[in-house]
Length: 286
Image 1 (cartoon, rainbow, N blue to C red):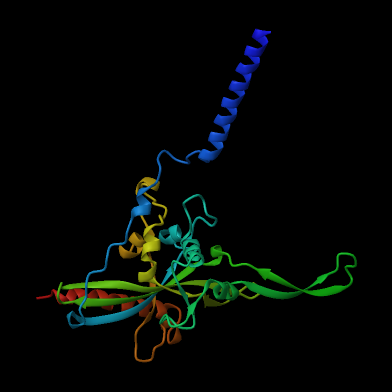
Image 2: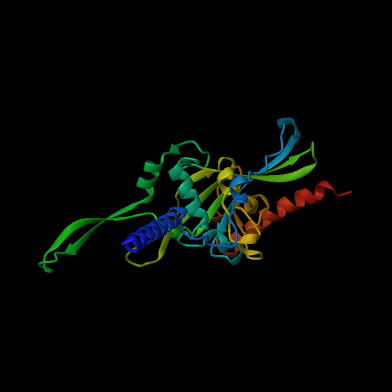
């Protein structure tokens, strides 16, 4: 009798310990997907801009660029198409920041950041509703009208527009550039022909406001993988992307493709690029 009681007590204690261990394992969360815990990225802060005085700025030039994420050097902006753990595409990071309220979207009608949009207003602009006629399930010969709603997919964004200012600071004797805004762009496709009709600006974001968000999100490092930490703020500040100029400030306020096409447009863009280089090089010519 005593042996039976002792065996029953032992089994109950063993079962309780097993249940406690299994519960503890559930509360601890999933296994670590890696060889170390990433904590440094949460403490990264963007490097502050140097102080500028209006009297020290003796020359400025405003430039608008396009980053085509289909180019090999820029593919790290586009992938992954779907989030994977802590790795997200650049447009997904922007959309998450807008949803959380840490950054602000501005109307695409102007690149001067005049009309802010809340997240609901932005989704109403990005989501698409189409009226179509479909056959009834019970009688295919009868058609009925319905509305299909298409949610915004960050993977549809293939290009980014950038607005930036070049300036010469005579106090430090340097020519520098500051990015002012970023605008995601999508292609509008004709449903009947499947051909591209035009490019559509989605919204503008103010880059200095977004630097803290970009500094806390890593992009894929082609050389060192996840060990070589490279944030999106580093990529922009170090100019580690490929782009081409589509507009230079001018008295007519027109872009290059408004007065040149094809090879002529490429030559005009290259001319604007060379003018920036020549200005800086001529500063130190004796």
